[in-house]
Image (tube, rainbow, N blue to C red; front, side):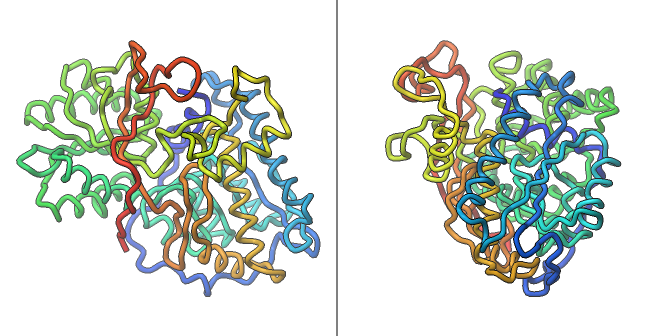
Length: 465
């Protein structure tokens, strides 16, 4: 898995020390009832926080190239903020970036930082999380408790944005429609219904249990499916329990003759589950999705050692998985317009050494693109809010943004009751390209060793409201 992919997955791994909120909350708070506080806004400046993982605290465990990755993110944030500021800012106000390094394994530190940003000094207007590493209850600390606008790539199900409304806005897809789309695709593809025996493996963390009981099980019930549910411990400090639970879950599913399995597992539980499948030579059809970044995790686990369990498995995503990381127009098999625009500025500022006839790229799912998307979306809403920028005018503006050229997803559209941007999904296959074929070949150069293959192209995400 590329470094950027590992970072995207990292959030679902390290935040398990947090106990997420759960349960229905009723209707979200309307945007016209948001606070009118202009905290963090002055006559000539807007102070914004950009949290970045402290890689030195985790690099030993996750083998991440910390210095290069951190430096690239800092360069990206300054580049895209400076582009706005150099053009006159937002109605004459410059964005003042506060780049804050944090340890994602230290819940007390994250809580302390949240309180500093939302209550302490210097005052902060908004928090932008371009890579989705500030997550779980930490999002709710910023929004529900701190009444501070936040844009974030990390998502779970709708109850989170209900709790954080109207301050929490996701650039990733709400997992409630993702799960609904997974069930719909599963039925149409024959993986669900049609006499298939279905299982669900879910972690014991509260967010996953809520996704199961409040969203997935009702969706399955609508199509007449009553799955066998197996629960796996997801406590980072209890790996032995996770391994044991995964082994027992596979034994029970195999004994029951389960043919299709829907996982609702973070990476530290998903990997032991796939390992148990491999050990027991049990390879059901998996219905993967964006939930807990399962598709990205799966790609990182092939070809060795889990090729039989994962190669050829398919899933639902609202991201540009299967896209081509080449700086050419979308019409020529390259970047979507939003990514292309970000690359144009990045390449102009940091020209790379040409590789053949193609200059070095930025990844569609990578850190440069993540920060570009988040910063430009924030600037769009702040500009639409007008000269009287405060929390209410900002979230009202967010609710009016439609057809925004995204990056991780092609288009972002919001509304008064829609707090996540993506509007469409596609079905992709995790493909092991060993020995290499042209199926994973994109432009000049050799084919990739593993890739996403698009099986069904964009369809509208189902409405769950």
